[in-house]
Image (spheres, rainbow, N blue to C red):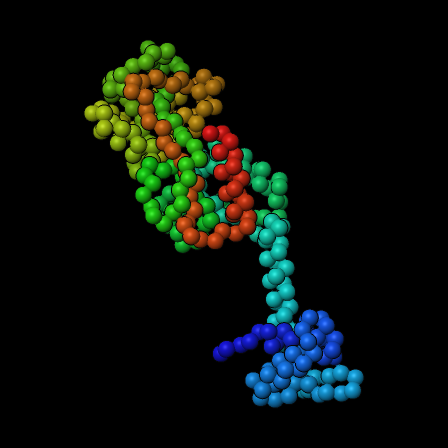
Length: 301
């Protein structure tokens, strides 16, 4: 069906004001053009819509029936336009973000707070599924933005912008392995101690595995833990020396529950990036959130 919506818009205005001249003034087109368009719609539908009188026009019974439906449609269009205007003015909308729980705590929280203060009517949804799952969610449009640790920028479907780095380190309880304090030791020597590693296939674990392989270093894990917080707790009670992300463990380091073991070579940092789907339209809210993060991280460079 080939529907000419302009014909129905003109019909709606004429029916609403009940006068061809007034309708032409409101539509800002000539009176003959309005009459011609009404005639075209009547021909298309196969019946008269108006009765012409000296005072103007009135709807036929068929015209009244059509008008009730067209009126609902016009109100829908007006509502849609109003809603789009609100979206554009950031007075409504939703931003859907994928990110790990720990990265959310150390990086995203400040932006969530700032964004909510400026645009309180925009809803925010945060997803904390596994990185691979969230990458698929980004590609199918379930989320607008993904912030994740990234070792390989090899996905042609995604726009990937590095926005920060996380630093790996080994930590020990402040009351255990004190001989390692205030020293820089060869990384290989740590294999003499009980080592606590994040459970594979985490990005942190992959990074250290790749680094050790590249440098011909062997580090054997005694305990593998899926939770970063739990790994830190295991270190504190003396179960061994743990591989952690320094930014995650910073509170325990500062309050001296644990200390950082300096090694040579130093452990590699892991970049984390803001990812969006290439060639896709983001909502006004999502665009503003992305802009806020990128502008801030650019200032920090």
